[in-house]
Length: 153
Image 1 (cartoon, rainbow, N blue to C red):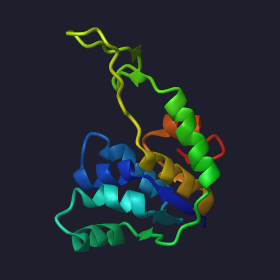
Image 2: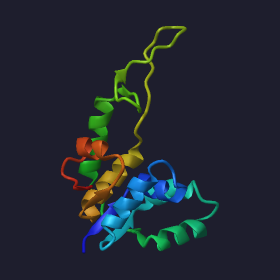
Image 3: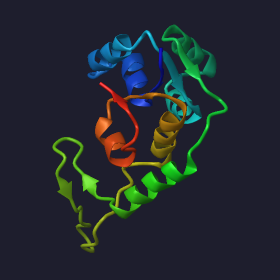
């Protein structure tokens, strides 16, 4: 089998049983013959939603997801994605995708928003360097910033 990185959004949907639960759980089921891995960034994003690490570890074990502690990092790929993002940063409506320029009602300055954080790029770089691809509910982001990364659908 292959080694597949599981993005935090897939695991959070499964753990929270939210509106994307069916999609997330069917993705995990579809590729379950493979080995699932996460890195420290994903682990910490998940940990926020658990009362302690022991409970998180049990939840990950039940899904047979392995934390890779000493991962290979491709700093060039991570930096290329991050700097590309910072250069082209725009505010997208999370519902319809329209690009908007929010303006302060008092001074009319255009407001800047950080929609992505460096962690997202560490995850993409990890997936590319340590696995055959990624399982994610946010495929557009990885297509844009990690064009060489295989996205499992």
